[in-house]
Length: 314
Image (tube, rainbow, N blue to C red; front, top):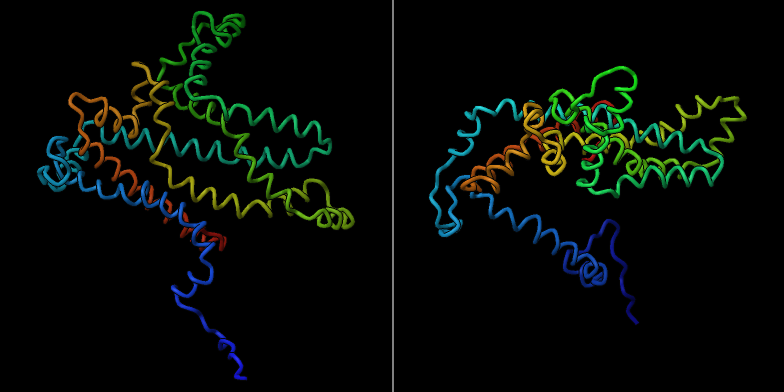
């Protein structure tokens, strides 16, 4: 009887053969592929409206081709530099101030030995994440009200004058960043806590035997284990430096703080949907410009990270 020969070393079956052999895996993968194709790649067909004067009645193909007109109009717009500055500064400050806080919180939670207290603390810091943006901004207006807000109540009791926080432009960025920290810092600790949970207890025991202090354990064990995840999240967040929470900004914006709260995302909403008449092509051009900048930022930070720490996304 003739024996069936085994495949040679290094043999790799072609795609058709792999699909036949592992068809169950590809069937499980198919819904995800369809989802990303429909909601991520298919809409790219509509990107051509940034080079056209899109009219709904004419459709994408029937609209007039205008080239880079919308980009030129945006670059020459009166508010161009203010929009760029406000958006970048808001997100940059939010990144450098809010990003380290979940790391610190995760390290502190990891030091808790009482499981009940640790679970209670985790639940308490996770809850704000599930509060809607509308409710959160409503709470902000209520607490900071110059007439009956609790913050101004204490300011007046201490001999000061009521402060119109939501009207003064210099208070927009601090309030935005503070509420971002309050609402999402606790939730963002999940990844870091998971990384710390994967550290073998034997490592801590060995460090204790060697006479390491708690501070040394945090620096050489905890931080060392969460640093790769922190770097990857930093790279991803750097790709959002020109993207802000439009809903929150729209709700927090007033006539007094518009000089600092006027950002790109909100401007796109106003000219693309709320404008009279709406300008979808102009708004799409601004959106494409923003995404290109974010893409360049994430590539740049990823390149620097790869050179300095050998940790990168790709």
